[in-house]
Length: 298
Figure 1 (spheres, rainbow, N blue to C red):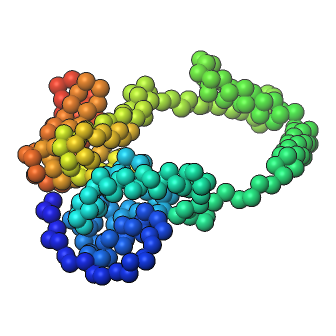
Figure 2 (spheres, one colour):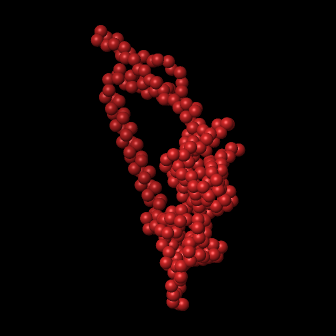
């Protein structure tokens, strides 16, 4: 990332007071007439994360290790000392903790816990409703069984026992249930195919914990299993652990500065230092096969 050309600062009043760390960042940025969109485009840090930093909204930010990376990128881009900016952030956090107002700063109103209520009363109400519902269900079930013909009740009971045995994995053969012998009746055969889950499918459902290791400062955006998205700036020596079931697709700002590891197997670097790689696809077999898999990009 090229260093942004320093812009002249506008004059401000000497009695201006910064109320929070986010306001401090916003004030320094506006003095240099730099927009959040410029910072996001050049540092590859998500715009919504930068906006949350200036709003002191921790509910919209990821883990603290990523927040520190965002602050470093932000400060370096607008011409501040990154270490001084991090020190200000830590002091601000300590102030919030000591005053007991940390949970209220930047919190989403929808996530604020409601005032405490009489929980014991609600527990008793729920228990009573469950008891009444259970009594009603068994009463209706008993009444319907008592009205059914004798042979139908025998058939229903046998099917319940048979299906329960099949689900438990017992070998019950191919049962046949017949109604009382009459000229008009014929044997009724019940066939059931038990549902099974192969050991291979069960093993495949267990997630692998993949570790991304920054050998040099790099930006990484990845999508895991088509569901979970990550957008981070990793400093040299930082690591990111990600659970994966099937696959992950990566966009890397510095392909030569990133290693990907699972257990004793390491993949990478995936390019030259400073090289940008897009849509790098890694599958589960790339980490599990002994001879190693090759990454592909679209």
